[in-house]
Image (cartoon, rainbow over all chains, first blue to last red):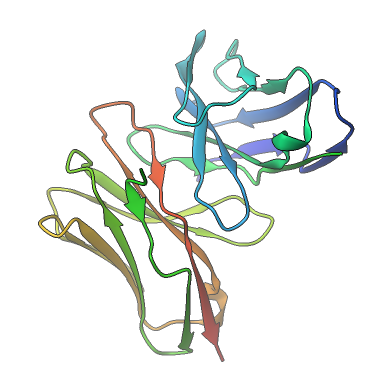
Length: 110
Length: 113
């Protein structure tokens, strides 16, 4: 079973703040992903990485950025949060097809 | 344009009966399909998958069927249990490509005692 951890679980913060959502996995997976999900909707891929120093934008345009300096760590950053960024952010990792998800960060921008 | 669709937003079944969740896709290049289960305030949990070279895969109470000609897959849960109540997402990918998953909108399953 994959172990993948996201912090914080919940974040309520004001407009204009810089935010970093943390994601770490202990399974040594090369591939990691960030998805965004609104209530009742599908998960949309916003960023992915094939390994250290590799990052790509996903299918859904996002103002966030990511970095992959270590295999186990894939943080997502919003330089200046806006109410339109309010959503749930899910991190995943995996090899060979199956992705394993963290419990997500529910982000609310006031 | 949504490539993976779950047309039933919700499904209610009686405990002990069969639950059938459906999923349609449009991209014939997809070669790997997965089902995930999601409880509120948790991340999706992998349930079962199927490769496009198969038409059926079974794991305990869960069976996934794939009909490539109809571009349709379904998840059967037998017998259904109250603990199965959750949102179920189907997802599709091209393993030979990036492995990115394309998700459907989800179906909320309620299993009544």
